[in-house]
Amino acid sequence: MFIDARQIESDSVVEADLCIIGGGAAGITLAREFLGTGVKVCLLESGGLDFAWNVQELSKGASSGLPYFALDMAQLRYFGGNTNGWGGWCRPLEPGDFRRRSWVADSGWPFERSELDPFYLRAEKVCGVEPHDWDLQSWLARLDSPRARLLPFAPDKIEHALYRFSRGLRFGLIYRSEIDGSDNVRCLLNAHVFGLHAGSDARRLAWIEAGTLSGKRFTVRAKSYVLAAGGIENARLLLLSNDVAPRGLGNDADLVGRYFMEHPHIKRRVIAIDRRAPVGLYSLAFYHQSVALRLSLPEEVQQREGLLAYSANLHPFYYGHDKAGWLAFRKFVLSLMPSRKTDPFIRFPPMGPARMSAREVADIIRELPMVTVAALLQKFQPIGFLSHYILETKPEQAPNRESRVLLDETRDAFGLNRVRLDWKTTELDRRTALRGDEIVGEELARLGIGRLEPLPPDEAEATGPWPANFEGGWHQIGTTRMHEEPRHGVVDADCRVHGMENLFITGSSVFPTEGVAPPTLTIVALALRLAGHLKSRFAEEPSGRAVAVAAREKEETVSG
Image (tube, rainbow, N blue to C red; front, side, top):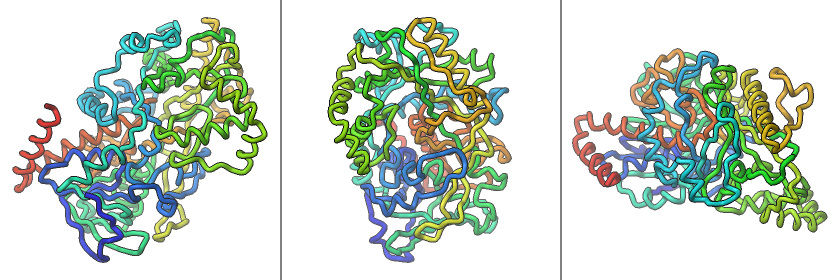
């Protein structure tokens, strides 16, 4: 059921068996796993069922490293979390992403990809894509289109990676009725967590301090607690919880907030030689058929040349699509789409209609004839009007201890420290992007498709700056990394905070490495895995027999 925390009496105590902080993909997935069981769940969501600016403002923060999105635009505070602005890209991480790579410092997960495989199958269903549907040849037969053809890249240099789209799946909408109709899962909306309070030895979380913007204060007490508030907020809450542990909970090794990762996005122009090349699969031409391809480097290439994982799309670019009026018009139209369809050339806040500036409106009016032509070219994509191609590169970022989330001196409406993001990349990140582009460029030239435009001299070196169009992918990864040893990680292989008995973390913040696949599918898989672990813990308690029976009955029903 949903309860507005603003209606709770001040100084009251909310009791539960399991308290989950954060109502995004991870928190909702975890809560759903306990529906109909004997476990009493309290799900705390900072926002309401709909977007509200006064709540969103709590996510404001500063950036002192590489340029990043405004932090109150990069993390959404209402039920459904960042899935409210999700582009829908789905792909599991690769087996190699889980292995220790000698040329990548701090790489490796505490388990193999096979550990997550059964949870990936279930995660696909949760995310709204058909399970077991990753066969590329099967998709080519289904699409049955002359535009859906593979480019004959040398397989020892470039591989095709299949991505699938969960179009328009907003967890806060699609799973709302399940939570609302539950007898054992309560979701407290507009409930802001101020701090996590442990006993004097900081080994067991005792209670959570929470409240509302209207001034209410209350306490949540549970047997087990899970942080599922995202890569930035998970770290912030641990750092703020410093009444017993001066550095913050889980931060004995000074790792909380460190190893922040993103997926760098950069775009390079490819001068067209063959304007008839079938690049539709490598762009977004088959978005409505829920499939796309990316170019990637084989593991052998990565290992031989000491590179990270690499991925790229190849987009056709038509005349007029670089005009300010068209870009403003398309930004507004895309922002109205329920699916929040992603676009390689336009970034807009991931919620509601894009706010148009007076200049953007003037650009649309002044260039209305060109906007009309550009819209027709976008719809029909005639080959004769192709201007060039764009190689959109999205490489992996290496784990980097100095890339981090910290507490800032500025305060929010509750008087709590906001965050400061110090995003840093390494020479290996830049070298991977440069070398990956070079390999793709060589293949495009060999096939007579196009010629990659050279970079300015200062950007052509691994130690040089990123291009001016460099940006992130709205992915906040790392900050509470997973490792078997407390000196190298914040949580263990079961996502339990090292040194604490009943505090767990789930979501992209626990990823030790990120690969190139967007994180949502893996976030859901990890939440499903954690749910199984927590069910076992509850079943082992003296009152856990009924819980175990109810959980088993639910799983049998789902699998049946």
